Length: 190
Length: 253
Image (cartoon, rainbow over all chains, first blue to last red; front, top):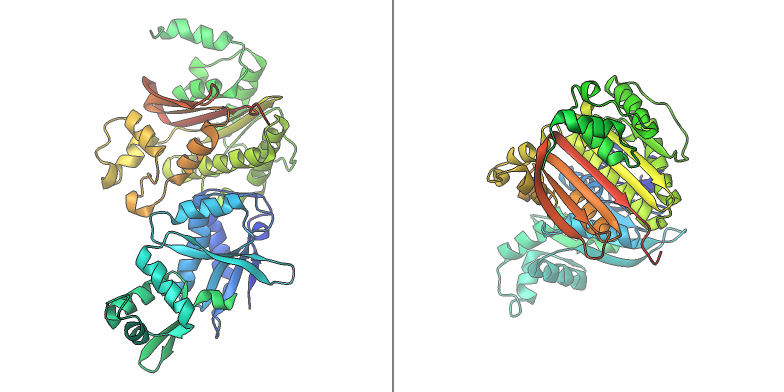
């Protein structure tokens, strides 16, 4: 099971990763290696040794792969690891205006994640929903409706839409519980 | 005032050329028949001319070295699949090395190499004639230069192919739009086109000069004298797109 990918190695061992074309090549290599897993699994895309990764590259490679994992229901949740400040800034640019975000962290030699955070530009409602799911642990739309009626007067359908939208960004893990769905924050996997 | 061609051709051909941007620009003016109009006599010009002809003949340079030459021209990838081809990747490493040898800080050298990658990727994706592409770099102590050129459809036709930008009137506006946020022929909703933004914002204010030429306009950003000065001017027709960047170490680096 693939849980850790050294992006620099996969991208031809160069410290500069740029352009939509090369990002598309990264995407095809990642797709070639990815296999669906039984249990939800974090996949660390480790940017150790990468000096520059441009927004076009990240959009095609990282966000493209994240979307692929969600659409194909691979149960793989990509997390950007060990990216330097410049790469994080380019990631922000790639996510700008899309109401989108990804999980970012540092990873030590033993594979322990730290400095976990969300990078991107989620709107206020989505950000609040993410915070509430993190607070609740595992939750469904009905529970959110019941527990937060006073602060957020929307029905279960509204909550469901918000939860599904965050799951499409691989920020929430969706699991079936009978006829309903429960969600938990992807950060739990890291 | 423009000189008639019988006056400027001898001037160009006899010039003692130091930078590669003007040479490539002149050659791409007459891409199909450059040999008729362009016979440079200086060393740099003759070196360029020989490489220009061999690149047009699709001759491949096999050089696995990662050490920069003083000046080098190369054929960029023509397909997405070629964009990690070994010889191309080594050329990109030599370009990074050249930027550092010129005295640019390591981070800035990598940043420039990143924007160079963006530009060549755009050439492959948008020019519709990637086989006409040519790239090059040159370094001297205190100055680094790179060029990306093609004889494709140009920025105006590329942007106008999407309804979001059908309103663009001329190449000057097209160049200006392409240098803004999120503008590419894939439309506004695609949120693509940020490669140009990286180029403009990260380079221009670091003691650099950028020149974009396409169709009948040229767009320059001069950051070599303090705050970057942008300028758009009409000029003679150049099919395709030419980008040249000249960078110097910043005063405190």
